[in-house]
Length: 439
Image (cartoon, rainbow, N blue to C red; front, top):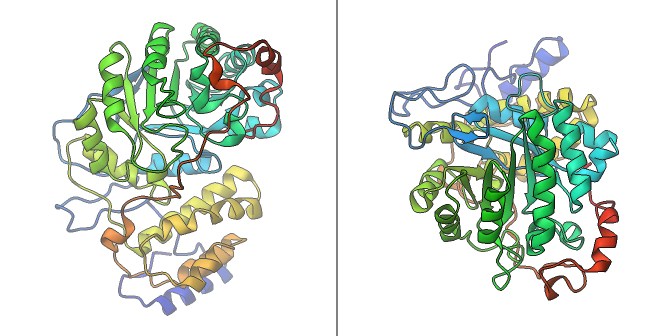
């Protein structure tokens, strides 16, 4: 059944959806594309797969080359726990091309083959290249995890996490605070690259500037990564202490790009639009961008990014109807991924506030959608919206997700006393991942 015409009232739309569902027909919220470019958007429209059909222009950047991989649009989806599962990655891929990285998984959990860790690194059969991110603090365990992934052909690209500022990670000496221990950092990179090399799987690094402004590590870490055979480095222009507060330091990305000349340097932080991505490239000279919170509730951002890097100014500006189409598609993919409708809907709930940012959706409707339990209920709730509402403009733009405030990083005792590992911490390494989520 086709989507009701734009002139159809919200009440009639809701009734139409409910009648179709009761009759066993496919509800009219089933999308044929992730989002569509309005007819008046510079004379261009979205293609059948939801990507922007841009006129032939000169690309802003060449394709991104990470080892043997070529990424036509130099854009990477940052791993986000509870967000970048296979369903969300597929939704983003349906909008535009790029490198889509799975949620972070701990090396210990992979080595132990926990069910959750194996689910995290699952990929849709059509997903190429397949990309995973591994977290760890013990070189031997990280090397074993990378060997498992590469030798069993479970991914085409492996990213190493040195950027997470979460206390549960940093208190174990991991994530954004690990490069402070230069010997440990070298050991992890050496083990990972050696484990992946025989299988032709490139290893990359995602990191922050350092622990805080007095303990910066990014320039040294970037050069070490380059020397040890890492295929690319990505820098989030914040310290661990900043978490997601304040402004990302794009000048730091520029300095890293000046220092690291043999492998691609990607920039991350405060990319909320395609224009932000282009401006980061202009200011820093980076070889590509990494997008995190900016795509929450906006998977069509990858269509904008693909168009922008192709030199086109065509952008997706979805009305509420297109947003509803995307949400329902997201729900379908979630059910397919988790194999359980209730779990899928529970995972979908967190996305609702992001999807409806700036749109005239009432509090009661938002609350109901944030408690959705079945696809049938989702159909009814989406159908009850005023789907003829246009794109709200600036209200839907800008920062997404919680920025929070600066926080003093939680560190292992004596972590800042030396750049070298203490004997006590060496003994603790084998146990340091046991309480970290991510598999």
